Length: 465
Image (cartoon, rainbow, N blue to C red; front, side, top):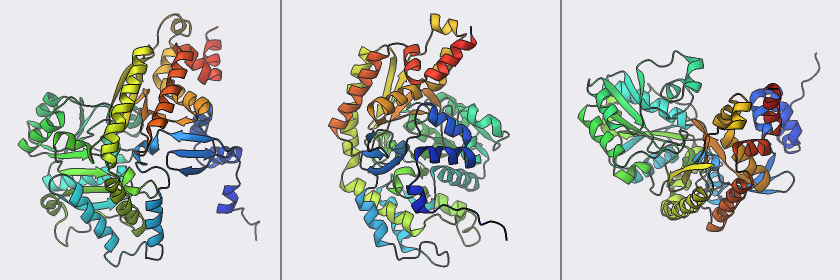
């Protein structure tokens, strides 16, 4: 017999050093990701999390203003969700030869709090899966093929979701994608009407606020007009509330700011209470029956882990806690406070060119570089800034001030702020003071680059001489 292979236990992992983790990720997962995270020292080893705070293996405490891209509306390890998981610990988690009461209860609860006549829910495991389910419902229910989506949109990276994600960097390597998908400008109702006029579009999928696009808030009335146009032309309106849902924008769902009811609603992230992966695709009884009505079509779309007991128990607890603590109202009030504090910084610092958001999803966009240093590096500083300036600012916040943020995927020149909705005013003040200090100390792109990525910029400069 050959020598037994060494397998790690959970106890082993708890004793890993930061370098142990780096080496394992490089060897067995994604070397490029390990290199990228290490560049700005984003690969710290965190060992504890609670509420707004996480701790590294050296005992340092960090404020989390990223909130897992909107998945931590209740904060890290909320006790109410942990308690719910304990309560279902002895129940079967996966048992397809039955109907699950926990799953049915969460579907009922969602139907009570979502807009309009949204009633039927399919549970899955992620936001991308929720989008996949929405696209399939739209095609089978309408008998049409075409799907419209927006430039700058982000709906996921599985094949269908990627086909309606509006950044070529993520799409081109996997072409050809799902046929019949076309992008239009975000916020442009005329462009939408022009595409709908042939009455061959199954669905228009849209984010009420584009998160990864750079926290882009559409013109007032855009969603309501999209709703009107879709109804007029027999097209289903899909609202992707994966990032904006469950109170993030100051309403339980962002489409409620314009009293819009979508035909299909995509949910995920905070539905799992920050502890369990869960996604949901919701639609009306009428549309569901067109798609999957009757026994012959009931199993056309399924998921082994979708609607498992632990995930839906977390969802039940999370939704109830969000409502009981009135987190949408808190997000509206705290978001207004934070936006004004950051706008004060924008008036003070030239590197900040725009501040956008609603509730506690806020984007800060930075000035694009130019000048002598950019010329000396043959445009390298511009290129570096375009892809990495947001990461540089996030790196400064993390390494100097112990505040966690990140840039937006479709617009890396923007950092996003999506703290748990339980964030305090004192913690928001700590963030804005840190940003003020960073921009006071680094008044130019090159200073920011040198402070954050000395090795990279030095290499770029040396290549030009």
